[in-house]
Length: 219
Image (cartoon, rainbow, N blue to C red; front, top):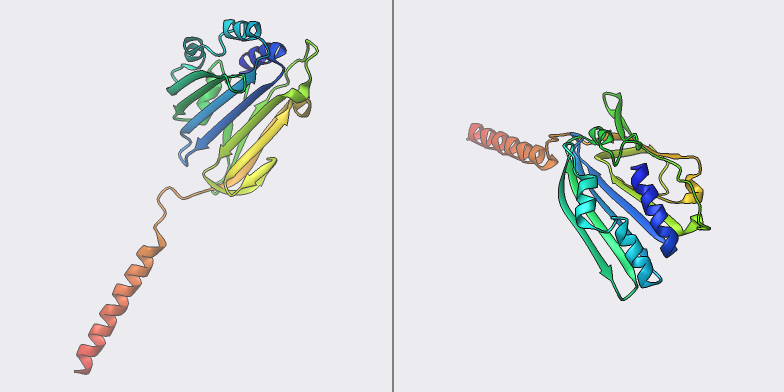
């Protein structure tokens, strides 16, 4: 993924601002889906042409970069928004195991991991590698956002924002520095947890039977 991000950074030298958002939903069995959206502004038509030549906003190039035996691409969309002079790419895919994504060229350096601490606790982590700067580009103009929906009760984390089991990490290049781990410890939801209403229904049936038997006995 570092090579891919470096290409994104190189292209941003022409446009001045790049935004990268990664949204991942993980199920209790370790499978899940990921949505990636990156976009940038261009100041001239020449900038737009140069960016397109890099292949970051070309559907065929993006498909080749993300296609692998470890994930299933479900959508690749590229488009321009002429009202605000931005160009976008959106990628969506499914995976059977988060750890297996490390075997792909895109995520090889990300160290994606879900490990068991004990029978009831897991820890998620991903490494964001440092990205070299240059071209007089300001690090604060490079925005990276990682959003994870984890399948359990969050016990600890280093996210910048959290809402229940949704965790968000937002960084500029300055904040990434020499590299940064995003991590969270959670207690997984039960795979087949019996709904509480079943217990209440069973209790009601039991009480009905007891009342019926008691009434019959009194007669």
